[in-house]
Length: 234
Length: 337
Image (cartoon, rainbow over all chains, first blue to last red; front, side, top):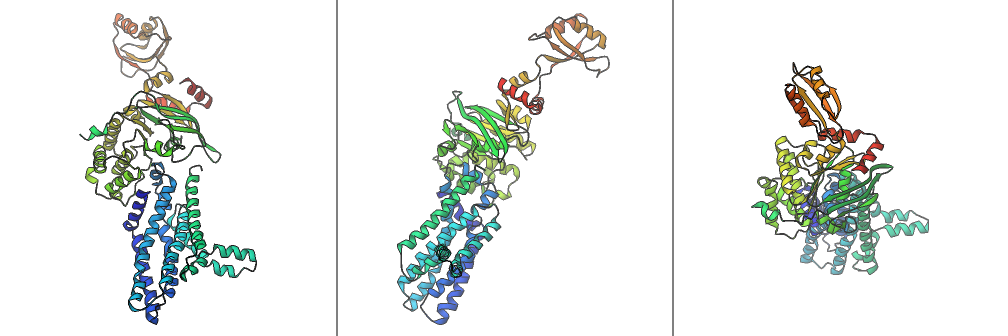
């Protein structure tokens, strides 16, 4: 697992993907920071955080698009699958590499709250909650991306499909609002990953929400493992 | 020096290190492999031969645990490749048909990654430099793999298979796409490596089998159609005791001399290639060796024999014969061998 993790992490920065992801994130979030808290002279950062979610929404699919699709396409999966490592190790290694690049951007984004601390009194609880929420929410989205990447050999298909699914899940709450059927409404609500993020943003670390996100991550990584395993038999 | 550590002696008690039982693989309703049974002895170089699409790569992919069989099982040194994956896979080095290379890594980075992936316990720098020396890629160690020629890529692929010093090497068409000089070099490397480990090598280049393999398995349409040493194969499939002779005499004269020898099964006049000579294909009755008698008969008649050669089949002929014979016959042959 360590070998895969290291290779993937390096791979992000051997190709332009890592730089584009980190660079574009920094550019956009800095722009939102300037046009938000700075322009309005407020220490309320929740405005910025909701914008950061939008930035990730557009960027996360490039983080996961090649993870498994490219291995299949270049037939390098032959090396991984015939080496003495288990499939869960491969999948988790790749997942953690993607999360690390995500983590880099998240760490960089700490510069915004720190700036606010220098000049004001932003609410600490909400800030910590938001960051925990970011990790869980986007951890779940990255797991979905990894899963989609395992379904295809084509990076572009993987990226577009991931983006589509993320967009759908992202706006699930709004979609749910259009359902008059109470069962459909509840199901759609339950599928809305973003719905549970607001608690974190308000500084509430609710254990059921944490378990919810961890379960989503687990389920999609598990499905990824199954997809790879199943390919052996087809 | 580089080979010293490398050629660590594996036990060579001649037992089977790879056993394949009733291997069947279906893609949908298409049977790609149909009841393959195969044992590979420790320390031998087994050539795996077959026309394109015969099932060579599929067999190798199953052997290495990359894909699963529909039925049947594979054990490597007693370990089932699916049930005891980690242990079994550690014993195998695999070079697939397309070497699984990460093109944007340097050779060194790539081998380092494989080293970590396989969780090798040996001292890293020494182990890797030994391998790079064996396959002669030291001087490209810091180059990006995408900038290497096909031959070097193939070598890097071979190096990857050698990491961890596995007991069994499985090489899928290792010399495809190389120039003749490189082919010879790679073959020599494989030969050296095969001195103390088990090698299974697939190819459709027949020379290659003649050049390096101890034993050959011929596979066609998912079935094993022949499996033996080269000599035995040519003896059992070819007609033993058939010879071509060229005598310096007219057809009738030579024919008469041949007819005077007892125990001839057939005398068949071929043609006259050189002026004043005639060629015959002759066969002896069961188990007789009449070569000396024939020579003496011609000597007595003072007719010089200028050519006398066995017509045992070459590998090419065997190959064509076993891969084109009708199914029923192939089955018979399989059980014979």
